[in-house]
Image 1: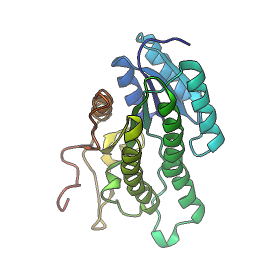
Image 2: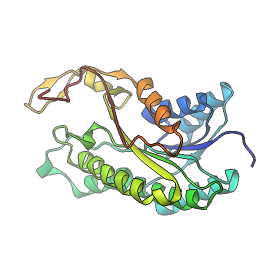
Image 3: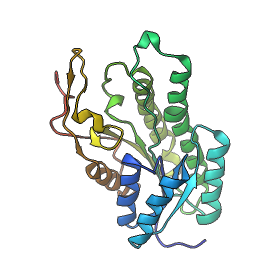
Length: 252
């Protein structure tokens, strides 16, 4: 398939930050592949892109499954012949549970999606980007500010996001010889369905429950577009974009 424009893959693209980023990338001229486990919300995102004059397709994929990721990237290679951007956005929260009460199955489910899924997609992207002409591309990992500082009762999510930082650094180093740039965006309190509860109150480090300021998710999406638009000779290794007044820096 011959298409005009650079090809971008957004995982977890059916809602939240993934959806906002896919829409913003499409407005910036990217051709979108929007992936996720449920096809219906993905198709709604694609329909919105196409209605606005963009080019996009939806692909059902479970990033935690090696065969599913392999099929996704095989489709991209066959249909487009290349991939210019991977946004490793797919992620899973776990219910807030005391660390000592954390079921192993809950731990594994978060690790499988957030960390193993990002690895599987990164590995597949490396294989495609190093073989295409011209060689190279960009990978952006969604780290979350939990890659820097945890919330209470969030061991699985926090551990995977700290690990994402290691994956980002390793990918940035190993990608040099293939002209693959890798960076990470750490997003704090972008307003999506998953974090809307923060308006009414969430647990704080001192044990209290307090509401937290949010920012429009469009600001996070625009930051992704900014990182993606750089030439491959330049890279934003880490970016933090957050609600200005959220309790994060200093002592809250």
